[in-house]
Length: 154
Image (cartoon, one colour):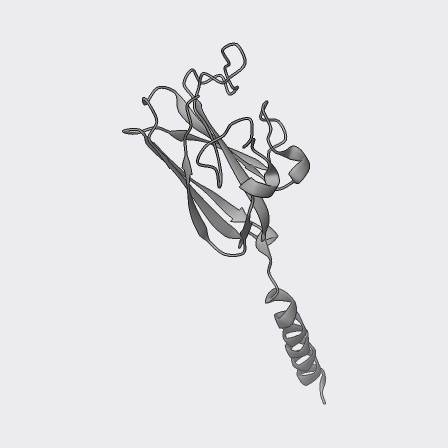
């Protein structure tokens, strides 16, 4: 084998060895899953909807919105809002929303209860016997997914 053939052969082998490595791309390479979250029924179109995505049990619920995995603000049009979380790795997630009517990114409260709308994945109502927790609010994401969350005004 001459020098030219040897270089060609080694280049070919190098390319073949790299092919299997490049085919194992994960979500961290920008090829993750999408989660579409829809909300309808806001009492007005003031402010925006704050969508917070959580991937840890010890972070949810997060009244001060500091332990989230990702957060997106959505515009309210005719009482509805939709956002898409992109490039998410496979895993267990929960979503919380806030109808942030004054855009201060915090839950405004009356005496004890929120005066702005809130919502959680897998919840239709909340109360003393049905407080939000990660176990009930969570879902598995192992492909593209769309969920609808009900906004609750107390």
